[in-house]
Image (cartoon, rainbow, N blue to C red; front, top):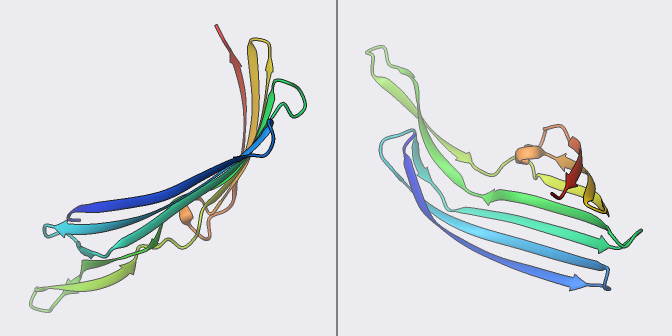
Amino acid sequence: MGAAAGRTFFAGAVASHKFRSDWSAVAAAFVGRTIPSVRGRGAIREIGVLTSSSFGLALRGSGVFTSSDEIDLSLRQPLRIESGSALIELPAGRTRYGEALREKLDVSLEPSGRELDLQASYSRSFGPIDLRATTGWIRQRGHVRNRDDDPYGLLELRRSF
């Protein structure tokens, strides 16, 4: 495919706020820019400048129902290419004299969808035992538009020794 290298620059911002002693929120957003270069004689001839982003929002409550419990709610988007393209050269056939024909394709690297992960969890301590229940919903996993939604659940039980 060819050897690729590049320089990446990222910038981001994180903000948090404590509403009361038992509730707090955090927001984070990041944007990046990658300037790639392609070496060698692979199928990938050129990659344009890539712009990427990610973000997350979270809300945490502690001591909501008892003095030893926590509720966490979050929404996040994993790293996603927002813009960029690549020039790919592929074999497309042969002439009647046996010479290889090649086709150049200019393809977008921006995915068709936008993955969003929504998660809620509740945890509580029972002396040396911690119990945590988590449920979530992933929309367009892998930033693929037509992918089915992916609900999940997890129950954790921990004991300190």
